[in-house]
Length: 380
Ligand SMILES: *Cc1c(COP(=O)(O)O)cnc(C)c1O
Image (cartoon, rainbow, N blue to C red; front, top):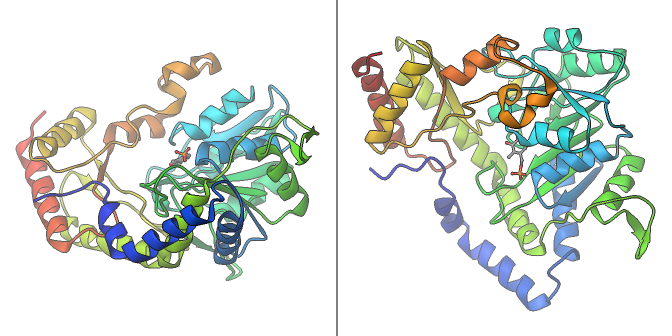
């Protein structure tokens, strides 16, 4: 069985005519940077997210960096973020000479622990970057409350969760990424809304921030060759914008199909000894960027199960084997093993199974059977 961890090709074939004509059209027009295609996609995405401004950029990492650059931070300012995330979230904080302050996550949802978040606020704290990990929104209602009480900004890392929703206690439903001062996402090909190359976007409801973001992404200029601030060069290719415009109308269907795959995994794996299935908070709509479970007997067992699946060509991945606070590159911040016990335990227990919008039922059943065998047949 040819199982793929992520399948971008089947999705392409399904809407090939739309994609091909969108790209060919663009080639004939000759405008390869900026222009109509980019503007149209930004407007389309703004409408989908119900957010006032969408500013596209080159990738999700740039989106996060630019977001921090417009928030008026100074070197040494502290930014609260989970250690259990993709490194990009932490990298941009460090690159801007800000100080990442690592916060624990909940062991069931893998998202930022709001009690630990409160404990880690100091007079130098300026902002919070919650990450909606694996496609599940963090507890934004509580995070926004803490941010407001402590005068902190919130930049949401929505790279893994585009299209996911949160229902607040007043009944209002919001898309993840539209609640903080700024939301950031990535269109890396394997993300839920993937381009055929790199891409990213920044969202905000605030006119002034939107103007600054556009400026920073364009070398700090509003008027050509007049540079008011130090910026960067970060833009979405017109071809990628055309691809994304063709794919966006299908995003909800893709996310539904990921949910169906997750449901079937849950069904096939329920009550399996040695496994904890992914938990979903009841006030969120998860979009299952990853289907990530925990293998509970520790790192050696998890690694043995992984090796068993690898040997049978069943794709799987560990997101992430080393927590950010223990990475070599971030030693200067002074963290040690034991500082974030939940996070550290997760890095020893998590395993992600194949997940994409085209995953056939028989493959899911096949993967589950082998995973159960792996749990039985591997010993420590
Ligand atoms: C993918 C990802 C990013 C970075 O996006 P790129 O487009 O690869 O730069 C940032 N944060 C998280 C959580 C991600 O998963």
